[in-house]
Image 1: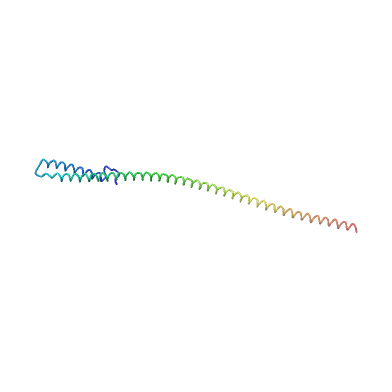
Image 2: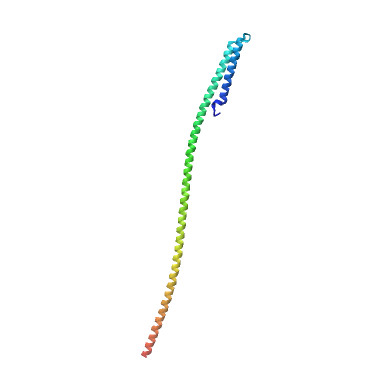
Length: 166
């Protein structure tokens, strides 16, 4: 169907039919002035009734076409409205997705920082534990050395006392 109903095929047919009617009326008037070839009145009325019937049929078809065009415009408007709603929902969904992705990046970054801090603390504590173990070993070695000295001194003193007692 054509969007401009005045230039549609149906409208053109109606115009052509009207022009043909006018031409026929003009020629009929010319023939009436010439009585030698006059049409019988029943033939003329049959032509007019056929033309009127065609015009009525074309007008009915035009009206139906206009109604259908109006319905299609309503469907188009409804579809546009639905499309706008869907586009709005799509934009909202995209925004939510971007927000979630950004939040996920932030959480991953925090987690990585936390893991790095834990590794640093673990390394620091491991170093401190190693230092403490070394210190404990040193102290145990000194303690054993001092214990041996004490025993040696005690043995020497005992030996001296025994020697004095003899």
